[in-house]
Image (cartoon, rainbow, N blue to C red; front, side, top):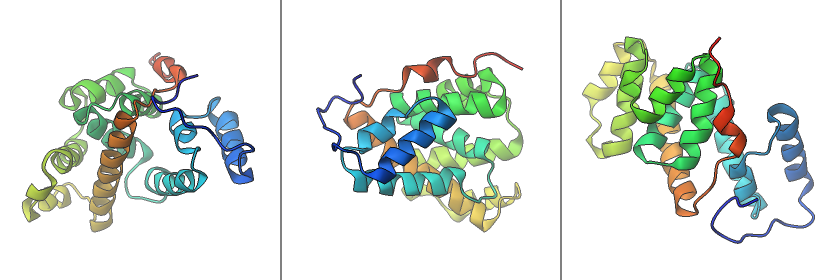
Length: 189
């Protein structure tokens, strides 16, 4: 299986904590995400990546898991990151129960059936991705007007920033999404 365009060998044997992580992924997801396999050639980098990802995407936040995944897909779509569009598009489909929402996030998020709060959040994430130096107090005020807290604004920025980095890594090494993601959560209901 080709995970990236680079020929990187995994440590043999894998460190125990990496083996445990891979076993958890297999039990919960039925697969080991290729992004984890890609980082596993350097276990210390995998640990750092996983810690940050888990904190941002699964940790406590005023943003729902779906909202964080929506941000991930919008940022990845703007950056044209194949891996993250496929993987996180599947997560949006799964979490929302609406296959069309995952497609909209990948292709044109404005076509998704979003409420005003979600649209404000994604407008901010888009601006961070395209022109972060142009963010002003008016952009943060627009989020506050939709009941986003200061912590929520931080989390939107952190998720968008993390995926800007992750997208660039995935694209630079031609990271391939797991084939299973393509078929996930395609049936409505």
